[in-house]
Length: 178
Image (cartoon, rainbow, N blue to C red; front, side, top):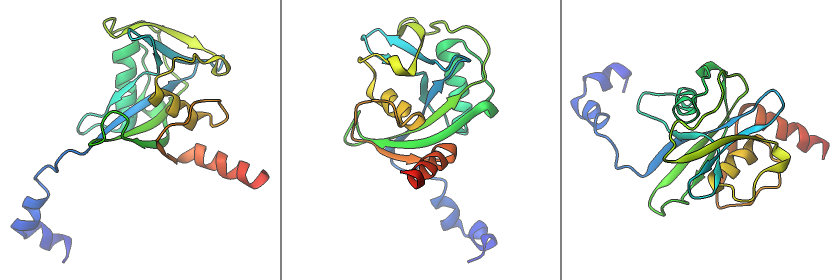
C-alpha cells in the first residue's frame, strides 16, 4: 500500500489516532557540567542527591524537555540546541508494570546560578566533583552519570543501557585499545 492509500483508508487512519495503553514513560536526566568539570546535584528532601530532569511532554523533544526541566528545577537556562543526548536507559525500578525510558543528557553551556525552584522537593543545588559523588545518590541519577562517565564507581542496577553519539564512539575507541 502506498502512503496515499493509507491516508485514504479510514481503518488505517483511525488505528493511528487511538493512543496506546500506557506501558512506558519517557524522561530526561540531565548532567549539568560547569567550567570546572563539576556536576550539579540537588539534595532531595528525602536525603538523596539527584540530577535535574523529568518527563518529556507530548510534542517535546528530549533536548527541549531537558532544557525546560533544568529551568523549572534549578532556574538555570540552557538552549535545547546545547543539550546532547548521550544514551538511553530502560528500567522498571518504579513499577514492574511500567517501563521507564530515561534519556541520559549533558549540557555544558547555560546561564544563571542554581537555586531551588521547587523548594518543596529540593533543599539545595550543589556543584560536585565527579570524583566526590555522595553515596546517597538517586539510583536513576547514578545510571545517567554512568552513561556520561562509564569510569565512575557507581552502583550497578537493573537497567538496560544504550549508548548514543559521542558516548558510543568513546566506548568503541576504548574497546579497540583494551
